[in-house]
Length: 219
Image (cartoon, rainbow, N blue to C red; front, side, top):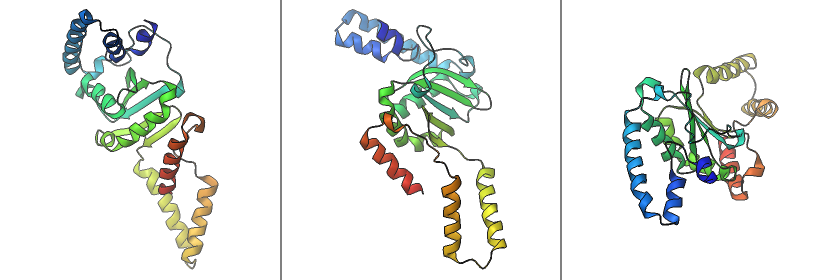
């Protein structure tokens, strides 16, 4: 029962279903089906703004650790979307790895989920595979633990470095191409920080190689 209470939420009873199926509790299946039908209808009709700051845990529990937390920041208006939109985007992008914890809103919507720490590497890979779909749904930022998977850059953040480079070229117009490249590489080495800072201990060797390869390609 402790496992069910810890891992199930009002919108996700996958663990409970698995227990019922494993022990072949046929009498309980009818109630599960009824609950899922009612929950689906409820999620389709309930506006996100009515769910803000409300816990989804079946039993009130301590907040998950940072290393066991995944957050989606979406450029949505809470009044324009239903709870089903949230559950759909979370389940389709992460599979069954995460559990919905809460939803908050300021100028955007922040969806907080929890997951077992042992699945960190698998979750990062799963979300990376579905990143394109998330971006189409106005994703602004996606984090897993202390790792930033993706962040939307503002135009100003892109323009400022470009303006600095243009100014340097104007000030040193006689530099060769090789000299300019060397100067840029030196600046990047001194001040650049990878967007995603990942605790290597939590990932398998294969996962490390995959992420390192992807990062090197971006450079």
